[in-house]
Length: 116
Image (cartoon, rainbow, N blue to C red; front, side, top):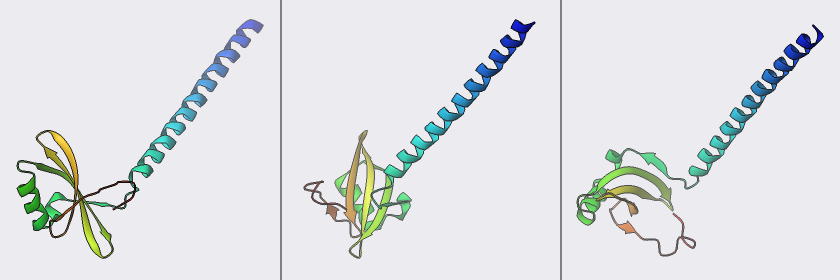
């Protein structure tokens, strides 16, 4: 009888420990996800609809990236001017380009020296 009571106590302790371990694991996963999402939002660009791109930018894409599909568009203001970051699919290859509101391409010579 005594052994039976100890057996039930051991089983209860096992299940309580397992449930607590799962709770800790779920919390750790949630914290990791939050850190990852925060890191993505560091470039100050705000996502916009592709249809919100200025006509000059759309025309520049059509001219310089014939057949490309615009997947995503972002905008930010820098020194009083709007800068657009555009993700394109050019024949199955993803390209990221930057343009001003007049459709002029912005080139980065050195990513470490110059930031948008």
